[in-house]
Amino acid sequence: MHLAIHELSKTYPNGVRALDAVSLTVPTGMFGLLGPNGAGKSTLMRTLATLQEADAGSAVLEGVNGGSIDLLKDKDATRGVLGYLPQDFGVYPKVSAVDLLDHFARLKGLVDGKLRRATVDALLERVNLHAVRRQQLGGFSGGMRQRFGIAQALLCDPKLVIVDEPTAGLDPEERVRFHNLLADIAADVVVILSTHIVSDVADLCGRFAVIDKGRVLLSGHPETLVGTLRGQIWQKVVDKAELEGLKARGLDLVSTRLASGRTIVRAHSATGSPGPGFEISDADLEDVYFSSIAGYLPSERTSERTVEVA
Image (cartoon, rainbow, N blue to C red; front, side):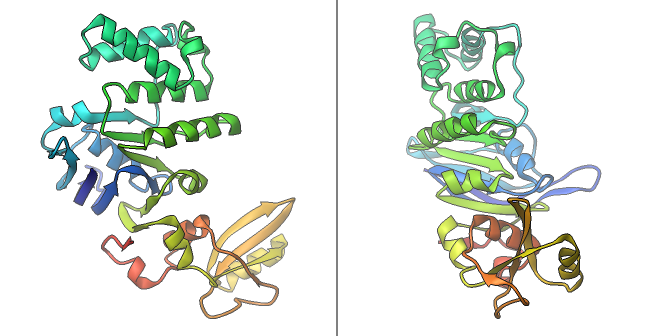
C-alpha cells in the first residue's frame, strides 16, 4: 500500500501559492514531512484529509483491499479509511474521554453498542488512557489530549493516518510516549507526520521530505540524504561579534546552536574549510534540513521537481 501524490497545487484567493506542483510517493510506514511554519504542510494535510479542495493534481491511495481510492474525488471513501489528528485538536472539556470517544465512534458509523464499547475500551487501553477514561478531558495534560486525539484517529482501523505537528508543546516524557505510540501505529498503515521538529523525523521516519514555500525540495531516506553532506559540514565556536563577521563574509551558514552557553556555528562547504578555526563535523538530519531550505545542497536536489533519493 502507498500514497501517490502528483502535481498537487493550491493557490489561496490572496495570491499565496501554498502548494506548487507537489509530487510525492508515500509508502506504508511512517513518512515525515519537514518544513518551516508557512511551508505548506498543513495545506497539504488538510487537502489529503478532504477538508479543502486542490486547484490541480491528484492523490491516490493504492493497494486498499486490492484497489485504490482517489482521495480528492471520492471523499466518502477517503473518510472511511482516514484517521486525522489536526494541529489544533479541540475537545469538550466537561466530557469524559470514554464518552467523547464513544460519540466519535457513533459518528464513524459504529452503531452496534457492544462492538462500539469494546472498540472504545481497546483504543483507550492502547493509548494508555483507560485508567483515566472517566475523567473530564478539561483536566488532561497536553500529552494526554494528544494521545486521546490519536485514539479518535484510529477508530475503524484507518489505512491512512495524518498527524499534523503532534509533539509541539509536549514535555520530554510525553514526547517519548507519543513517539512510541506513533511507531506502533505505523506497522501496517500509511502514516504522514507533518512537523517542523527535525528530531521527530530522525527518531521515527524511514523516509521523509522537505517542503518550503509550497515546493518539495527533496525526499528520501534520512541516512542517504545525510550521506550526501559527508565531509561538507564544518563547525566553530564563536562569540557574538565574530558571528556577525561570518555573516558579513557571506559564508554558507547552516545553523547556529547554543551549547553550554557557547555559540556553535555550522557551515556548509564542499571545497574544504570555510575559514580559520573551523573543524570538520559529522552531518546530521538537521544539517540536511537547513541546507535544503538555504539551497546549499547540490543543484539537482533543489530543482523544480521532487527529488527522490532511493
